[in-house]
Image 1: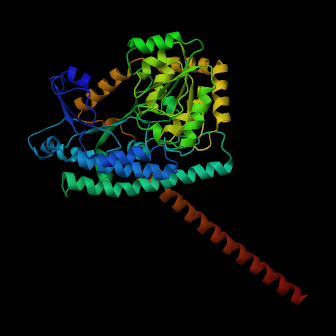
Image 2: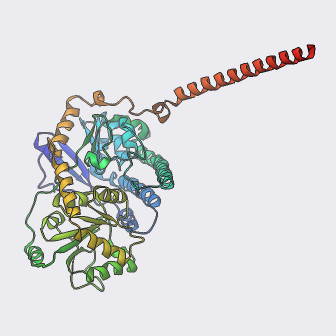
Image 3: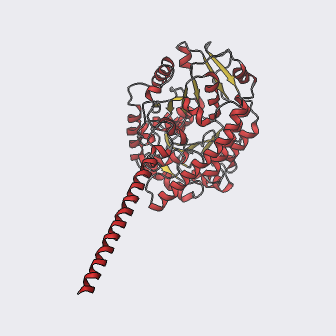
Length: 475
């Protein structure tokens, strides 16, 4: 958004996490801060992550909470002014697919939409653009298992995927109600509003999406370092430099509160870390940690991307988040993931597919399993070698992700949309996509043909039998 503002576009951003204040923002950039949304929804969502519930329950709870958070955020006075001011005009709307009710703005302003997913594509994204959809060959980011599947495991994964997609459709009913409450009862349903989506930006590299065949209005933006290198704080730099055997960095990201893990799980981590010959940087959300080993340094925050770039870092133990994955790959640090939510399982599976790390289960991890994984990864140089190969592939691009994003954004603005890039299968019903009407017709013709042939054969056989019987009788 900042680059668009630098290029002369007037940009309005609605966000709960503003990077700039009103005083420091670019003159072309207006930031509407909605972080003061009632916190009970956000607290409920944060407390659910890391708990031992099934992924289906977690995801559906997350979708519902996010929909309600969105509704509360849009009660902001500044947002309401955008909705009620009929003089405002916009040439383009960006939105995250997790807040689908934002599509109401496309109806309000009659403007084209670019969908920007901070992850890979989600359920309805590929249907919107008419991309190839195959639940096993091209899995969605909610999949927990991706490779080395038995036949029954494939059946199980397929069942879970279809169940999640069905539940996601049920959440859409709630989002339709919210959209109409915000933008008016005459606002079309989301199914109709999604037809205003002209382009999709995905925050991954194609190889992280199994090289899915997509139409030209799907733009992959992943693969370029997110953060420029900065100097570490002096105390942290000294701590890392002084390490004799190396340092393990451990963080479960911003969405997981590690102190809410069970005491049993915390003790497993602490016992293993205490027995290692390495120093440990542990991102911890509390001031203190009972039974903290001497070789563990706590902090509520670390400059993660710069920590990972330090040559003394041996291993990154984390939850499997996409941003943390990108930073680790760019720094060349092997990974151990204990996924707990959302796309983390999907990413962790890809660590093993690409040979850059290991996936462990937070439910079944033991001291023996964790220690063996740590020793295997640190002791096997192939993990770092695979990371270097992967990093070289990801960064070998003609244009940077920022340059691609800006060019395609202005392309949509210049042409008032991107219908010329839309695939023929976009917004097509699954019955038409799979040509079920044609298949039904062919099946009907086949059945009628078989029936007629059967009747003809029976008639011929009956006449032959009758003829033989008459001949025998005459004899």
